[in-house]
Length: 213
Image 1 (spheres, rainbow, N blue to C red):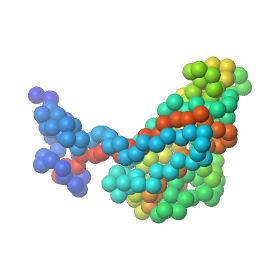
Image 2 (tube, one colour):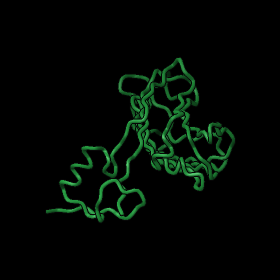
Image 3 (cartoon, one colour):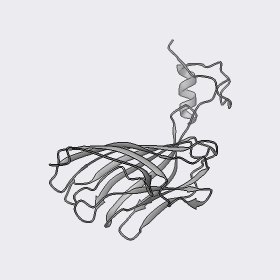
């Protein structure tokens, strides 16, 4: 019988020495307790009638990893720069130039085949750039957030996006960012950069972990 092994951690959900049988794993997955399971915290829609979308109940004390998906990101006009992220620290939105970002964009767009962006003093986090607005020209992507609820650690973010520009040419973006301040982050703001979106869907999840002794 195959077994899985998980290391030691403080909060035990299932009595076990760290070795799980297939039946143990199936039981834990069915109950949503097995490591890597996702809990949908909130789903919202970004539309042309709003300037920002705020997630203010992110269960930061429960999860040390959060996962956000952004789907069917459609610009109202061609090639408008896409969404940004800002973080709330104990209810206060951080808008100062304190974020550090680094991203690599690879595309089939002439002159932007390999484009890097970086900053140690950004006032918002942006990893992607705009798509076209014809049929099929849109963006899809996701973020992972780390340590948001830990007052003794910096908050980290990684992300990846893919899209088509107004000439139907692919671009991809992968990167990360840091809020280099040890603080409790209890909210996430998604905001547009320039222009408007026809609309897109945002889902925020908590990533569950399994703890064993």
